[in-house]
Image 1: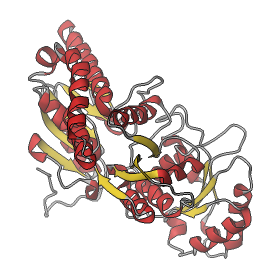
Image 2: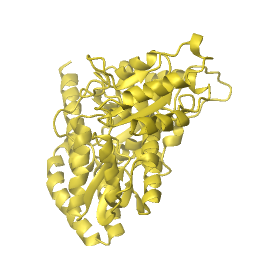
Image 3: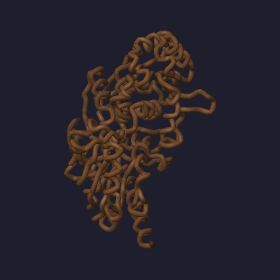
Image 4: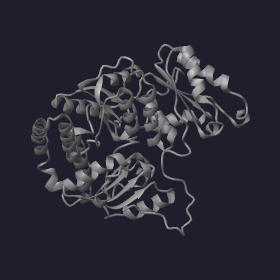
Length: 439
Protein backbone atom coordinates (compact mmCIF):
# COMPACT_ATOMS: atom_id res chain seq x y z
CA UNK A 1 0.00 0.00 0.00
CA UNK A 2 1.44 3.37 -1.04
CA UNK A 3 0.99 5.99 1.64
CA UNK A 4 -0.30 9.32 0.37
CA UNK A 5 -0.30 12.69 2.02
CA UNK A 6 -3.57 13.98 3.44
CA UNK A 7 -5.19 16.63 1.25
CA UNK A 8 -5.56 18.91 4.28
CA UNK A 9 -1.93 18.65 5.35
CA UNK A 10 0.37 21.42 4.16
CA UNK A 11 3.88 20.13 3.61
CA UNK A 12 6.36 22.38 1.83
CA UNK A 13 9.50 20.39 2.57
CA UNK A 14 11.59 19.15 -0.35
CA UNK A 15 11.25 15.71 -1.88
CA UNK A 16 13.87 13.39 -0.46
CA UNK A 17 15.45 12.36 -3.76
CA UNK A 18 18.92 12.84 -5.21
CA UNK A 19 19.07 15.22 -8.17
CA UNK A 20 19.01 14.35 -11.85
CA UNK A 21 22.48 15.75 -12.49
CA UNK A 22 24.04 13.30 -10.03
CA UNK A 23 22.57 10.44 -12.08
CA UNK A 24 24.18 11.91 -15.19
CA UNK A 25 27.52 12.03 -13.36
CA UNK A 26 26.96 8.45 -12.20
CA UNK A 27 26.60 7.21 -15.79
CA UNK A 28 29.57 9.21 -17.07
CA UNK A 29 31.66 7.85 -14.19
CA UNK A 30 31.34 4.29 -15.52
CA UNK A 31 32.35 5.13 -19.11
CA UNK A 32 36.10 5.28 -18.70
CA UNK A 33 37.00 7.91 -21.33
CA UNK A 34 33.80 9.98 -21.32
CA UNK A 35 34.03 13.61 -20.21
CA UNK A 36 31.11 15.77 -19.11
CA UNK A 37 30.61 19.50 -19.57
CA UNK A 38 27.98 21.01 -17.28
CA UNK A 39 26.57 24.38 -18.25
CA UNK A 40 25.99 25.83 -14.82
CA UNK A 41 27.59 27.36 -11.73
CA UNK A 42 30.83 26.13 -10.20
CA UNK A 43 28.85 24.09 -7.64
CA UNK A 44 28.54 21.52 -10.44
CA UNK A 45 32.09 20.48 -9.56
CA UNK A 46 31.14 19.73 -5.95
CA UNK A 47 28.48 17.23 -7.02
CA UNK A 48 31.23 14.79 -7.97
CA UNK A 49 31.57 14.22 -4.21
CA UNK A 50 28.41 12.13 -4.27
CA UNK A 51 30.50 9.58 -6.16
CA UNK A 52 34.26 10.04 -5.94
CA UNK A 53 35.69 9.20 -2.54
CA UNK A 54 32.25 8.21 -1.27
CA UNK A 55 30.12 5.85 -3.36
CA UNK A 56 32.97 4.79 -5.68
CA UNK A 57 36.52 4.36 -4.40
CA UNK A 58 37.73 3.87 -7.99
CA UNK A 59 36.12 6.95 -9.51
CA UNK A 60 38.32 9.38 -11.42
CA UNK A 61 35.83 12.14 -12.17
CA UNK A 62 38.27 14.63 -10.65
CA UNK A 63 42.05 14.57 -10.64
CA UNK A 64 44.84 16.26 -8.67
CA UNK A 65 46.37 17.03 -12.08
CA UNK A 66 43.46 19.38 -12.81
CA UNK A 67 42.35 17.28 -15.78
CA UNK A 68 38.86 16.61 -14.48
CA UNK A 69 36.32 14.47 -16.31
CA UNK A 70 33.55 16.80 -15.13
CA UNK A 71 33.97 20.41 -16.21
CA UNK A 72 31.57 23.34 -15.77
CA UNK A 73 31.11 26.70 -17.46
CA UNK A 74 31.16 28.62 -14.15
CA UNK A 75 27.92 30.36 -15.07
CA UNK A 76 26.83 33.11 -12.69
CA UNK A 77 23.81 35.45 -12.64
CA UNK A 78 25.81 38.31 -14.20
CA UNK A 79 26.43 36.26 -17.36
CA UNK A 80 23.05 34.61 -17.76
CA UNK A 81 21.78 37.00 -20.43
CA UNK A 82 25.02 37.07 -22.44
CA UNK A 83 25.45 35.10 -25.65
CA UNK A 84 27.74 32.28 -24.53
CA UNK A 85 27.32 29.88 -27.44
CA UNK A 86 30.82 30.35 -28.86
CA UNK A 87 32.30 30.00 -25.38
CA UNK A 88 30.48 26.70 -24.81
CA UNK A 89 31.41 25.40 -28.26
CA UNK A 90 35.08 26.25 -27.73
CA UNK A 91 35.07 24.42 -24.39
CA UNK A 92 33.57 21.33 -26.03
CA UNK A 93 36.24 21.50 -28.73
CA UNK A 94 39.08 21.98 -26.26
CA UNK A 95 38.05 18.88 -24.33
CA UNK A 96 37.21 16.80 -27.39
CA UNK A 97 40.67 17.38 -28.89
CA UNK A 98 42.44 15.84 -25.90
CA UNK A 99 43.88 12.41 -26.83
CA UNK A 100 42.52 10.65 -23.73
CA UNK A 101 38.93 11.70 -24.47
CA UNK A 102 36.66 9.18 -26.18
CA UNK A 103 33.46 11.23 -26.08
CA UNK A 104 32.14 14.48 -24.63
CA UNK A 105 28.70 14.86 -23.09
CA UNK A 106 27.02 18.19 -22.40
CA UNK A 107 24.22 18.83 -19.92
CA UNK A 108 22.84 21.87 -18.11
CA UNK A 109 21.76 22.78 -14.60
CA UNK A 110 18.45 24.66 -14.19
CA UNK A 111 20.05 28.15 -14.20
CA UNK A 112 21.25 27.47 -17.75
CA UNK A 113 18.61 25.01 -18.96
CA UNK A 114 15.81 27.58 -18.72
CA UNK A 115 17.63 29.81 -21.25
CA UNK A 116 16.74 27.44 -24.13
CA UNK A 117 20.19 27.43 -25.71
CA UNK A 118 20.36 25.15 -28.74
CA UNK A 119 22.81 22.72 -27.15
CA UNK A 120 22.21 20.07 -29.81
CA UNK A 121 23.48 22.43 -32.54
CA UNK A 122 26.58 23.28 -30.50
CA UNK A 123 27.31 19.60 -29.93
CA UNK A 124 26.92 18.74 -33.61
CA UNK A 125 29.21 21.58 -34.63
CA UNK A 126 31.87 20.64 -32.09
CA UNK A 127 31.70 16.96 -33.08
CA UNK A 128 32.29 17.86 -36.74
CA UNK A 129 35.41 19.82 -35.83
CA UNK A 130 36.99 17.49 -33.26
CA UNK A 131 36.07 14.21 -34.94
CA UNK A 132 34.69 12.63 -31.77
CA UNK A 133 31.17 12.13 -30.43
CA UNK A 134 29.85 15.21 -28.63
CA UNK A 135 26.42 14.42 -27.22
CA UNK A 136 23.71 16.51 -25.59
CA UNK A 137 22.05 15.11 -22.47
CA UNK A 138 18.93 17.22 -21.84
CA UNK A 139 18.95 19.08 -18.52
CA UNK A 140 15.94 17.74 -16.61
CA UNK A 141 16.88 18.60 -13.03
CA UNK A 142 13.53 20.31 -12.45
CA UNK A 143 11.48 17.25 -13.39
CA UNK A 144 13.55 14.07 -12.93
CA UNK A 145 15.73 12.45 -10.26
CA UNK A 146 19.12 10.69 -10.24
CA UNK A 147 17.67 7.48 -11.63
CA UNK A 148 16.12 9.45 -14.47
CA UNK A 149 19.49 11.06 -15.18
CA UNK A 150 21.24 7.70 -15.28
CA UNK A 151 18.64 6.28 -17.67
CA UNK A 152 18.67 9.41 -19.83
CA UNK A 153 22.41 9.10 -20.49
CA UNK A 154 21.91 5.51 -21.69
CA UNK A 155 19.14 6.71 -24.01
CA UNK A 156 21.37 9.41 -25.51
CA UNK A 157 24.12 6.83 -26.03
CA UNK A 158 21.65 4.42 -27.65
CA UNK A 159 20.52 7.10 -30.09
CA UNK A 160 24.05 8.11 -31.10
CA UNK A 161 26.49 5.20 -30.73
CA UNK A 162 27.99 4.01 -34.00
CA UNK A 163 26.45 0.78 -35.30
CA UNK A 164 28.06 0.84 -38.76
CA UNK A 165 29.77 -2.54 -38.37
CA UNK A 166 26.62 -4.37 -37.29
CA UNK A 167 26.89 -8.15 -37.59
CA UNK A 168 24.09 -9.56 -35.41
CA UNK A 169 24.33 -13.25 -34.52
CA UNK A 170 21.45 -15.26 -33.02
CA UNK A 171 23.53 -16.53 -30.08
CA UNK A 172 25.02 -13.15 -29.21
CA UNK A 173 23.23 -10.93 -26.71
CA UNK A 174 23.64 -7.50 -25.16
CA UNK A 175 22.51 -6.51 -21.67
CA UNK A 176 21.19 -2.95 -21.62
CA UNK A 177 20.24 -1.28 -18.35
CA UNK A 178 22.47 -2.87 -15.73
CA UNK A 179 22.65 -1.22 -12.28
CA UNK A 180 26.35 -0.54 -12.90
CA UNK A 181 26.67 2.51 -10.65
CA UNK A 182 30.36 2.32 -9.73
CA UNK A 183 33.65 0.83 -10.90
CA UNK A 184 34.00 -1.54 -7.96
CA UNK A 185 33.80 -5.32 -7.93
CA UNK A 186 30.14 -5.62 -7.01
CA UNK A 187 29.13 -4.04 -10.32
CA UNK A 188 31.91 -5.69 -12.31
CA UNK A 189 31.01 -8.94 -10.60
CA UNK A 190 27.42 -8.56 -11.82
CA UNK A 191 28.65 -8.50 -15.42
CA UNK A 192 30.83 -11.56 -14.89
CA UNK A 193 28.01 -13.47 -13.18
CA UNK A 194 25.42 -12.76 -15.87
CA UNK A 195 27.96 -13.55 -18.57
CA UNK A 196 28.53 -16.91 -16.85
CA UNK A 197 24.80 -17.70 -16.70
CA UNK A 198 24.29 -16.70 -20.33
CA UNK A 199 27.21 -18.90 -21.39
CA UNK A 200 25.59 -21.83 -19.59
CA UNK A 201 22.68 -21.44 -22.03
CA UNK A 202 25.01 -21.27 -25.01
CA UNK A 203 24.73 -17.48 -25.35
CA UNK A 204 27.61 -15.04 -25.78
CA UNK A 205 27.49 -11.68 -24.02
CA UNK A 206 29.01 -9.17 -26.46
CA UNK A 207 28.04 -5.93 -24.72
CA UNK A 208 26.79 -4.75 -21.35
CA UNK A 209 25.60 -1.18 -20.80
CA UNK A 210 27.13 0.23 -18.76
CA UNK A 211 30.09 -1.90 -17.72
CA UNK A 212 33.00 0.40 -16.95
CA UNK A 213 34.72 0.25 -20.34
CA UNK A 214 35.68 2.84 -22.93
CA UNK A 215 33.14 4.67 -25.08
CA UNK A 216 34.21 2.70 -28.16
CA UNK A 217 33.27 -0.57 -26.44
CA UNK A 218 29.61 0.48 -26.47
CA UNK A 219 29.53 -0.20 -30.22
CA UNK A 220 29.97 -3.92 -29.57
CA UNK A 221 26.20 -3.97 -29.12
CA UNK A 222 26.02 -4.09 -32.92
CA UNK A 223 27.10 -7.76 -32.79
CA UNK A 224 24.05 -8.81 -30.74
CA UNK A 225 21.13 -10.68 -32.25
CA UNK A 226 19.02 -10.03 -29.14
CA UNK A 227 18.90 -6.96 -26.92
CA UNK A 228 18.08 -7.92 -23.33
CA UNK A 229 16.34 -5.01 -21.64
CA UNK A 230 16.88 -4.51 -17.90
CA UNK A 231 15.13 -1.95 -15.67
CA UNK A 232 17.86 0.71 -15.67
CA UNK A 233 17.73 1.09 -19.46
CA UNK A 234 14.35 0.05 -20.86
CA UNK A 235 14.05 2.87 -23.38
CA UNK A 236 17.73 2.67 -24.35
CA UNK A 237 17.29 -1.04 -25.08
CA UNK A 238 14.23 -0.34 -27.20
CA UNK A 239 16.12 2.30 -29.21
CA UNK A 240 19.01 -0.08 -29.89
CA UNK A 241 16.72 -2.95 -30.91
CA UNK A 242 14.94 -0.65 -33.35
CA UNK A 243 18.18 0.72 -34.81
CA UNK A 244 19.65 -2.77 -35.22
CA UNK A 245 16.35 -4.39 -36.25
CA UNK A 246 16.91 -7.24 -33.79
CA UNK A 247 14.81 -8.91 -31.13
CA UNK A 248 14.08 -7.07 -27.88
CA UNK A 249 13.66 -9.23 -24.79
CA UNK A 250 12.47 -7.48 -21.61
CA UNK A 251 13.60 -9.26 -18.46
CA UNK A 252 13.43 -8.42 -14.78
CA UNK A 253 16.51 -7.73 -12.68
CA UNK A 254 17.91 -11.15 -11.63
CA UNK A 255 18.27 -10.16 -7.97
CA UNK A 256 17.43 -12.93 -5.51
CA UNK A 257 16.99 -16.66 -6.09
CA UNK A 258 13.37 -16.62 -7.39
CA UNK A 259 14.16 -13.83 -9.85
CA UNK A 260 17.27 -15.66 -11.07
CA UNK A 261 15.27 -18.79 -11.78
CA UNK A 262 12.58 -16.84 -13.68
CA UNK A 263 15.29 -15.00 -15.60
CA UNK A 264 16.84 -18.22 -16.87
CA UNK A 265 13.45 -19.77 -17.66
CA UNK A 266 12.43 -16.72 -19.72
CA UNK A 267 15.68 -16.93 -21.66
CA UNK A 268 15.18 -20.66 -22.13
CA UNK A 269 11.70 -20.12 -23.58
CA UNK A 270 12.91 -17.29 -25.82
CA UNK A 271 15.61 -19.51 -27.34
CA UNK A 272 13.75 -22.82 -27.25
CA UNK A 273 16.17 -24.16 -24.65
CA UNK A 274 13.78 -24.88 -21.79
CA UNK A 275 15.40 -28.18 -20.79
CA UNK A 276 18.84 -26.61 -20.82
CA UNK A 277 17.59 -23.75 -18.64
CA UNK A 278 16.12 -26.19 -16.10
CA UNK A 279 19.41 -28.07 -16.00
CA UNK A 280 21.31 -24.84 -15.33
CA UNK A 281 18.86 -23.87 -12.57
CA UNK A 282 19.22 -27.29 -10.93
CA UNK A 283 23.01 -27.03 -11.02
CA UNK A 284 22.92 -23.54 -9.52
CA UNK A 285 20.57 -24.68 -6.78
CA UNK A 286 22.91 -27.52 -5.88
CA UNK A 287 25.77 -25.03 -5.61
CA UNK A 288 23.82 -22.40 -3.67
CA UNK A 289 21.16 -23.87 -1.39
CA UNK A 290 23.37 -25.96 0.93
CA UNK A 291 25.09 -22.80 2.12
CA UNK A 292 21.72 -21.47 3.31
CA UNK A 293 20.69 -24.62 5.17
CA UNK A 294 21.52 -23.26 8.63
CA UNK A 295 20.97 -19.51 8.31
CA UNK A 296 17.43 -19.69 6.90
CA UNK A 297 15.71 -21.58 9.76
CA UNK A 298 17.89 -20.37 12.61
CA UNK A 299 18.63 -16.78 11.62
CA UNK A 300 16.21 -15.42 9.01
CA UNK A 301 12.96 -17.18 9.85
CA UNK A 302 10.55 -14.94 11.73
CA UNK A 303 12.75 -11.84 11.45
CA UNK A 304 11.37 -8.44 10.50
CA UNK A 305 13.04 -6.30 7.83
CA UNK A 306 12.83 -2.80 6.41
CA UNK A 307 14.06 -1.48 3.05
CA UNK A 308 15.14 1.98 1.89
CA UNK A 309 16.40 2.38 -1.66
CA UNK A 310 15.63 2.49 -5.36
CA UNK A 311 12.63 0.60 -6.77
CA UNK A 312 14.37 -1.84 -9.09
CA UNK A 313 15.95 -3.91 -6.32
CA UNK A 314 12.76 -3.88 -4.23
CA UNK A 315 10.96 -6.86 -5.79
CA UNK A 316 13.96 -9.13 -5.45
CA UNK A 317 14.44 -8.03 -1.86
CA UNK A 318 10.79 -8.71 -0.96
CA UNK A 319 10.93 -12.16 -2.53
CA UNK A 320 14.21 -13.01 -0.80
CA UNK A 321 12.89 -12.12 2.64
CA UNK A 322 9.63 -13.98 1.99
CA UNK A 323 11.54 -17.06 0.77
CA UNK A 324 13.67 -17.04 3.91
CA UNK A 325 10.64 -16.92 6.20
CA UNK A 326 10.95 -13.29 7.22
CA UNK A 327 8.60 -10.35 6.73
CA UNK A 328 9.24 -6.92 5.26
CA UNK A 329 7.50 -4.47 7.56
CA UNK A 330 8.09 -1.38 5.45
CA UNK A 331 9.83 -0.06 2.35
CA UNK A 332 10.79 3.46 1.33
CA UNK A 333 11.51 4.20 -2.34
CA UNK A 334 13.80 7.22 -2.55
CA UNK A 335 13.14 7.98 -6.22
CA UNK A 336 10.20 9.42 -8.11
CA UNK A 337 7.17 7.15 -8.27
CA UNK A 338 7.20 6.74 -12.05
CA UNK A 339 10.16 4.36 -11.79
CA UNK A 340 8.04 1.73 -10.06
CA UNK A 341 7.38 -1.29 -12.26
CA UNK A 342 3.85 -2.39 -12.97
CA UNK A 343 4.47 -5.72 -11.25
CA UNK A 344 5.67 -4.30 -7.93
CA UNK A 345 4.46 -6.71 -5.26
CA UNK A 346 3.26 -4.30 -2.58
CA UNK A 347 1.23 -7.12 -1.02
CA UNK A 348 4.50 -8.43 0.42
CA UNK A 349 5.28 -5.24 2.33
CA UNK A 350 3.05 -3.87 5.06
CA UNK A 351 3.85 -0.19 4.49
CA UNK A 352 5.28 1.42 1.35
CA UNK A 353 6.33 5.07 1.16
CA UNK A 354 7.24 6.41 -2.28
CA UNK A 355 8.84 9.73 -3.26
CA UNK A 356 8.59 11.13 0.28
CA UNK A 357 9.05 14.70 1.37
CA UNK A 358 11.54 15.34 4.12
CA UNK A 359 8.72 15.82 6.63
CA UNK A 360 6.98 12.60 5.60
CA UNK A 361 10.21 10.62 5.73
CA UNK A 362 11.19 11.82 9.19
CA UNK A 363 7.77 10.97 10.60
CA UNK A 364 7.69 7.59 8.85
CA UNK A 365 11.15 6.53 10.01
CA UNK A 366 10.61 7.81 13.54
CA UNK A 367 7.68 5.42 13.83
CA UNK A 368 9.03 2.43 11.91
CA UNK A 369 12.60 2.45 13.21
CA UNK A 370 11.62 2.68 16.86
CA UNK A 371 13.23 0.00 19.07
CA UNK A 372 11.52 -3.36 18.70
CA UNK A 373 9.88 -2.59 15.35
CA UNK A 374 12.28 -4.46 13.04
CA UNK A 375 15.34 -6.69 13.32
CA UNK A 376 17.24 -5.57 10.22
CA UNK A 377 17.23 -2.54 7.93
CA UNK A 378 18.60 -2.65 4.38
CA UNK A 379 19.22 0.93 3.27
CA UNK A 380 21.34 3.12 1.07
CA UNK A 381 23.56 5.73 2.74
CA UNK A 382 21.08 8.57 2.46
CA UNK A 383 19.01 7.56 5.51
CA UNK A 384 21.66 6.09 7.80
CA UNK A 385 21.73 9.18 10.01
CA UNK A 386 18.20 8.32 11.10
CA UNK A 387 19.22 4.82 12.21
CA UNK A 388 20.12 3.77 15.74
CA UNK A 389 22.41 0.74 15.23
CA UNK A 390 21.48 -0.44 18.73
CA UNK A 391 17.85 -0.88 17.65
CA UNK A 392 18.33 -3.07 14.57
CA UNK A 393 20.97 -4.60 12.32
CA UNK A 394 21.92 -2.37 9.38
CA UNK A 395 22.97 -3.45 5.88
CA UNK A 396 24.10 -0.65 3.58
CA UNK A 397 23.09 -1.41 0.00
CA UNK A 398 22.40 0.41 -3.26
CA UNK A 399 23.14 3.96 -4.37
CA UNK A 400 24.60 5.75 -2.59
CA UNK A 401 26.69 3.30 -0.61
CA UNK A 402 29.36 5.48 0.97
CA UNK A 403 30.52 3.19 3.76
CA UNK A 404 30.39 -0.29 2.23
CA UNK A 405 32.52 -1.18 -0.79
CA UNK A 406 33.51 -4.17 -2.90
CA UNK A 407 37.20 -4.51 -3.68
CA UNK A 408 36.97 -8.18 -4.70
CA UNK A 409 34.56 -10.19 -6.85
CA UNK A 410 31.25 -9.84 -4.99
CA UNK A 411 28.25 -9.62 -7.34
CA UNK A 412 24.73 -8.62 -6.37
CA UNK A 413 22.95 -10.28 -9.31
CA UNK A 414 22.62 -13.90 -10.34
CA UNK A 415 22.94 -16.91 -8.07
CA UNK A 416 26.32 -15.91 -6.73
CA UNK A 417 24.97 -12.44 -6.07
CA UNK A 418 22.03 -13.91 -4.17
CA UNK A 419 24.45 -15.87 -2.00
CA UNK A 420 26.64 -12.82 -1.40
CA UNK A 421 23.62 -10.73 -0.37
CA UNK A 422 22.37 -13.49 1.94
CA UNK A 423 25.85 -13.73 3.45
CA UNK A 424 25.88 -10.00 4.20
CA UNK A 425 22.40 -10.10 5.72
CA UNK A 426 23.31 -13.08 7.89
CA UNK A 427 26.57 -11.57 9.15
CA UNK A 428 25.04 -8.23 10.09
CA UNK A 429 21.98 -9.80 11.68
CA UNK A 430 23.98 -12.33 13.68
CA UNK A 431 26.36 -9.64 14.92
CA UNK A 432 23.46 -7.41 15.98
CA UNK A 433 21.72 -10.24 17.83
CA UNK A 434 24.95 -11.15 19.63
CA UNK A 435 25.58 -7.57 20.71
CA UNK A 436 21.97 -7.17 21.83
CA UNK A 437 22.28 -10.22 24.07
CA UNK A 438 25.46 -8.85 25.63
CA UNK A 439 23.85 -5.55 26.64
